[in-house]
Image (cartoon, rainbow over all chains, first blue to last red; front, side, top):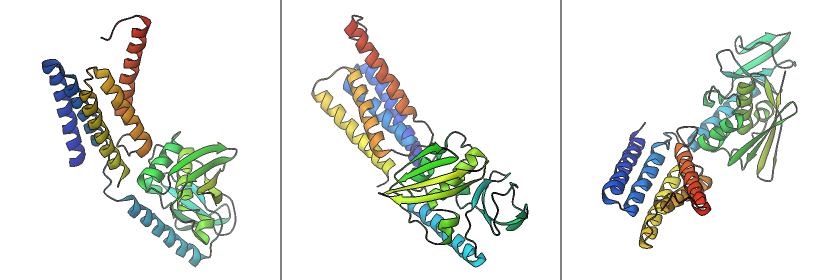
Length: 227
Length: 85
């Protein structure tokens, strides 16, 4: 708790004391109401987090990570769709097939490039792995709302619908551009990347960004979940 | 401006206006003030969608509980149970 929140708590407590004294001793309703309003405002300030890093900075950092991933993919000449999967240590990795093949059966990557079931994969940590709360089971939409709307301000609102073999995620007024080239094909946009990582963590299954399209100020991504 | 800060500033202005206006109108029922605070809090919450340190909003829940109690008392009063003066 920082000084701003502590000040809020002090205002709240002062307001409560003032309201109690006004009600008991003075029997004055407007003053009691004033005390109650100070208490509400104080508690509101006390539970308002102050973000030390502005959302714009977080957003640009994530965009830079995607730009770096683009260089790696370009250098390795990789363009297949990546599979997001949770590792044993609860970190999320993107497994990108280098020579065809579906989602890998192993949970933990053995090096940057490894083989599984006769196929080679490139394993990259998900750019947003550290942002996602570890306990997301049953809270996909609220977690996405927290990360995309509150923390990074990447879009105005987000809605998640379970549909068939995956989830349809709709981002309203996305602020990051759809990445062109390989990153867009392999990882998806920044919003889709966050959604895929969250769903991978929530379901514990490999997922991929199956499709993504922009229309009418909305971005709709379909996140496919594999068995 | 950050929307959490805008929320707190708007709430402070609205509450100050409520207290000054209602007291100028010689309103002495505390439940009227609390109902107005609840309304203002929820309107600001819907408009600004402020960030919170905790997942649920304890103030919103407390105000809703208070508002429900006030409404319940008023309904009982209308039905003939004089509980609020």
